Amino acid sequence: MLHGDADQIVPFNQGRSLYDQAAQPRTFICVPGGRHCDAVDLRHGDTYRKIILDFFAQDISAPQ
Image 1 (tube, rainbow, N blue to C red):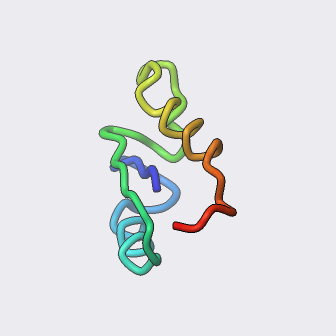
Image 2 (cartoon, rainbow, N blue to C red):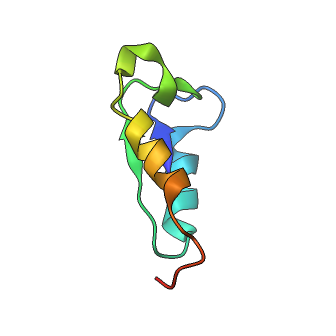
């Protein structure tokens, strides 16, 4: 889960609570100063782009 700590749509504590309830495997990545869709904003460069692309490239049919 990627979540901006300045998200104006879904408060950060609600995103963290959702993550805490999610089953493993899971990863929580905070985007400092990030609003709702800032992870792909140019001001972050490629910092989160690779994380997002790697997530979508995963073979979810493979056993964990």
